[in-house]
Image (cartoon, rainbow, N blue to C red; front, side, top):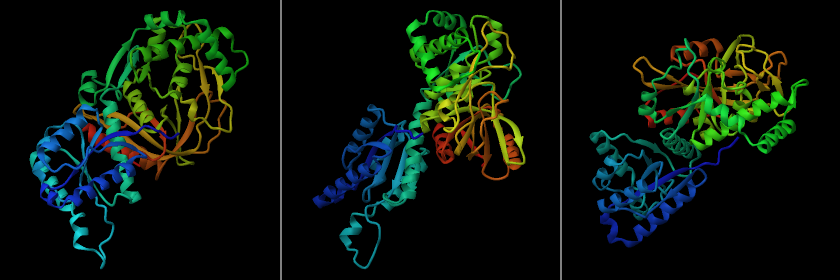
Length: 467
């Protein structure tokens, strides 16, 4: 599922003031800057305020980028530019900096003229700027290559996506229903550290308030939801209208609360729901449908996996909450499954999506919970775990592989699929655990490990790639 969202980028195009003695050069460099804007437009909305060749112009441009909420400053030495005109502004801005070491000219040949080299010698301006930023202790990132080269543009795209997602994470809000499951320590998180390190805020959702909202849900809204389910899902024989309505009311109430409080995902713990007694049922159907709308989710009160899911949904357009359940040594894959939560929008397209009554029976609620059961569509995929290190620092563990062509198994009765890592299963699982990957993950289609590594760089946390 492609994602149409673009990074907001400020293009800082630099040139030495000395070259103003040749007016045509600034005109040419302005045109080159505009060409860069056009080239980057498929994945970034780029603002180019014009060529900057004085400290005052750079200061004004960077201040404008900050005021307009840019995700990233991309610095291009359009021709040579002395580093000191840019150092003060770049040293003090909080926006991430990407130096794009490129030029308009692709090849140096026997036909190359001196005027061509004058317009294409930003390379040593990059070396000048990189040196002074390093000496000043200012973090920056750098990509070198021709601006039309697909491999170069792939790297630029990843940095733009990473900058957009880094900004997104700093404003991420996750709701928590109940509490994290006791004894499951791998996703335990200090909420203050979560907020301080990457900006994720955890907000507690009171079950009494949620239950009252569910009871007060407008009849016409619940009727529309139930009609949607009948149209899109194969409903198990014997499920009553009352059972369906209870899950639909909880779905409606959760969606309303998430929207009203500006949340990007939620986590819930089934035992807490049973102990509390306010909710009529468990939010299995709600989680499946909200995952399909781009929200993150975490089972057993796991806010870290809800945050990872929200991040991957924002990056890729769709993400699934998942867990490695059983090893399939014969197929060099892991069976992925949980209690009853999964993104139905990622289900196989050649099989019906079943709306079933949960049969796990692990918690007593007034109305049996309903869930959506399916296997996932085959395809290349990326698996992400957001976990914590010994010193309390957050960390991504990321792997690429594929969702295998594995049809629905009726006795499993919940979302499931097989994930095959790149390489040997045993080696992958060993490395995953040695890196501290938690037992809950987010999964999205496509190759995103390199981008996740860059997101980690910008968030200033560790990242381990294990496949």
